[in-house]
Image 1 (cartoon, one colour):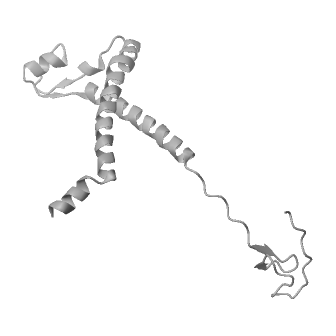
Image 2: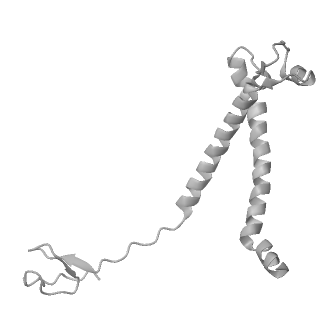
Length: 149
């Protein structure tokens, strides 16, 4: 059983998954910083200087100047500004992943189209082998096509 677990844990796909999770966590931190520190301040400026991270609803009815003060007081809050930031982060991550997967799919080699090994009878339009000199359906004699080699 230990041998089987060792084989499972050391498989290439398992290590690739671990590396992907670590890189994903680092990527998530970068995207969160991008949204919080770069994208949201100009958007907040467009909306009269609103800091989206401080948008919340206090459920106990008390007004607080910002989210940090409400949380310090232990007030129950609905943090819809943080939710907006999270949605924007998600959309950016989804866009980046879409672009990466799109490029990977473009780089994959397309298999060459197979050479045709049949042709169509010009008289009855039946599909026949490429080397046939007579159609088996209508018995018409077929003119040999010149070779393109």
